[in-house]
Length: 476
Image 1 (cartoon, rainbow, N blue to C red):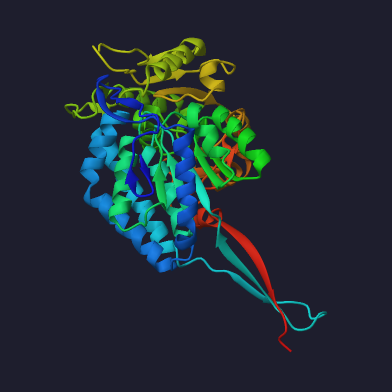
Image 2 (cartoon, rainbow, N blue to C red):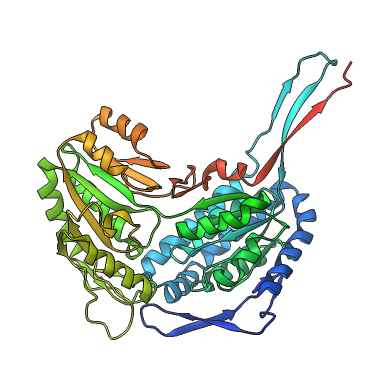
């Protein structure tokens, strides 16, 4: 673990093995942190906060920019590490590393662009003016999941650091290796000791200690909804600032006037990238009757090209490589959801013939029951329910018939329907004729059981500072 610029073992000297989900081979081991280790990391971050918060913002930004450049320089090594521990194909891992570097550059450039406010005040007590200043908060916790461990680390660490905070990061216990690699690059970039610390361990054992620590002022969490709900029960009584990016069941509405080919291509990426293991992704598709058959036919043909297998090996064209499901338990959940769904499995849904690894053949399921697990729950894998609709109002209603509200999209050139979707779909983001993709430049976050608060954009910077009003009088 990285604590105060030192690479340390756990206080209890225990370790956690990291397993490749494609081969079931052990690819590394990391310290199994205890409450004692978390206490040390937080205390170290608190000590480092004073000097770092007073460091010139341009210097803070320059360090983050150097870290971004080092990420680009070491992209191949980071991607190889990510594939070995997470399972995604190397091409997808490279895409994640590139996204991380872009986000770091974005916040390095944005750091000096945030402005305060100034105004003249009523003169009942004499001439005065008011200022609104932004002050860093202190120690921030960044808790990240296994599906996109690097990009989700960047969306938390970059704005926190350029705003003048210090960070204790806790990656998922199954994907800590690439995160530690990035932390090493931050140190090489000149980040002072203690400003970024990484503790490795199981959330069930150290999560509450980190979240409930009195010196942790701000928590950013990405993960399951139920875990986020528990986190709130710990953080709420302590009045901590929290953002939660939780589960999703993003609807896609494809209208009769849509570019069907473009919609199919986008849905393919939005559902099957990273073996469908994404909070943000195309998880329910509603297709208007006149283009339903054409859409489904093209969808099934393309999904059939995927070949689950080891992410380090390219599939022979025209096949496409898909990595494994991250854990056996997650794959078992997906199989149970398919079984409960009803409807017609048009392609995939089996485990294939693999001696090792937790693979699932990507599936398309036509018209599953509306009350089934496949529709009501978050489906965290390469399984896509597809439905037909006749009336646009019905499509909107069915899109909103979920406890989640993360992303959504619509495919149409009818400006009235675009406006309806933007206004009426209950989600934190709506894409129009576009793939579901989280842009660093735009605020992103969900509503309902998908959480609250925003990451990405300048709005994320605002969430890592405290606003303070200052009144200056005595001007007469």
